[in-house]
Length: 296
Ligand SMILES: [Zn+2]
Ligand SMILES: [Zn+2]
Image 1 (tube, rainbow, N blue to C red):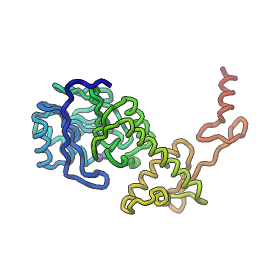
Image 2 (cartoon, rainbow, N blue to C red):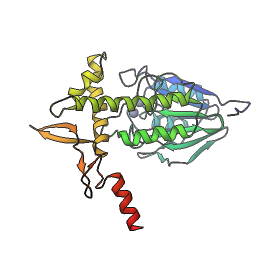
Image 3 (cartoon, rainbow, N blue to C red):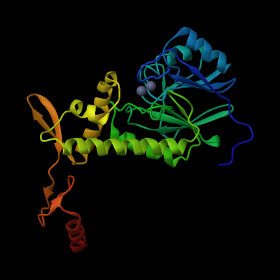
Image 4 (cartoon, rainbow, N blue to C red):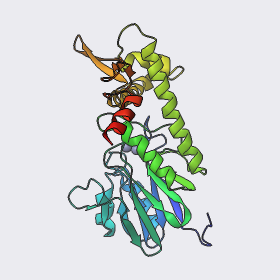
C-alpha cells in the first residue's frame, strides 16, 4: 500500500481505568487536530477528558466503538463540552446512530464505519482507509485476547468480524486496550489461529471425559498456568466456544441436577443411507448431492 506523504496525526490518551479486561486502561484515540475525531472517550473522568481536549484542539466528532462502561461514559460529557456530535451504533439520547459502511468526515479526517459484532452486538471498528489505520476497540487488543462473554458476546459473529477486518488489509491496528499493533494482518491471523486452537482444546476436553462437563470444569486443563483469578473470565470464553459448537451441531447441551453441561454430539444417521452425519444436516454429503442431482 502506498502511504500518503502526510500522515494523519494519531495520539493516544490513556484513561485511568486499569483492570483485568482493561489492561493499562482504555485507549482514547485522538485522530487529526483542530478539528480532531475522538474515538472512545472512556470513563467519565474530568482530568482524562481535559487531556483529550488538550490533544484534540477542537473536537469535530466523538465516536464510540461500543457502549461498554470502559469506553462510553465520557462521550456525552465530551460532546456537551466541545459541541461535537457523538456517534454510536447503539445510541442513547443525545447521540447519533452509526451505520455499517457510513463515512464519518470532518476536515482532514475520513473514517469508514465497519460493523464488527461479536465482542458486543453493537461493536464497530473505524478505518482510516487512506493510510490503513484500523481502530478496533475491543475486537483486537494490543496484548492478550478479546473477551467474548455470552450472551452479549457471540463467537460465531466475532470470528466473522475478524475475517471481515482481515479483508480490509489494514496496516496498523489502534486497539481499545494495549499497545499499537504494527503488523495488522499477522495479528488478525494470530487471533483466528488462537480461537481455532481453543476450539480444538474444548473438543478434546469433552472427548476425554466420561460424562458431560461444565465450562468451569474444562478451564483448568485448557488454561494451564493461568492465575486462578482469570478462571471465571476463562469460563465465559469456554462457554462462548461451547455455544458456537452447539449452534453447529457438534456439541449438545445436557441438563443435569439443575446444571448445564455439554457433551460431544452423537453423530446422527443419514435419513437416506444411515451413515453417520456430522452437524445438523438430515443427509450425509454424498446423499445430499445425489438428491440434488435427482431433483435437478
Ligand atoms: Zn468491551
Ligand atoms: Zn474495553
